[in-house]
Length: 134
Image 1 (cartoon, rainbow, N blue to C red):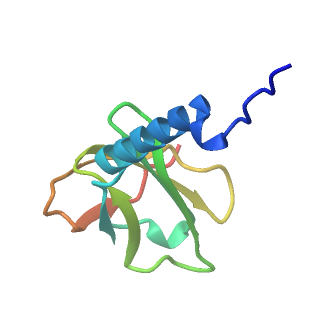
Image 2 (image 1 turned 180 degrees about the vertical axis):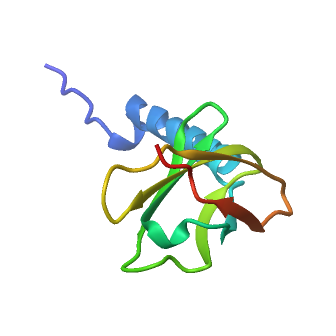
């Protein structure tokens, strides 16, 4: 009776597949995810009506509607004159949905701001009007 040769884990076919899949995943991550630059979005709160607002929610969505960033800010009193969001976004077109809520009552309908970012746009300043009440 012949002894079966001992299996070597280094020659296992699954190891080769795992290595190839890992390299493919790293390549996709470098190509698709590695090109997102850190952006600083500054929102200047312009116009009347901000003194009633106690909570602001920002949702940054891609062109196809995918939620990329969500940030909620709450204030004990009147919000400050500007708000800064830091996020990593590649160049492209985005929609920023802004939800505002007063001290009482339901939130206001969202205000949608369109945002186009180029490679050089790392610090973006935009004016923001208070969303209209229902």
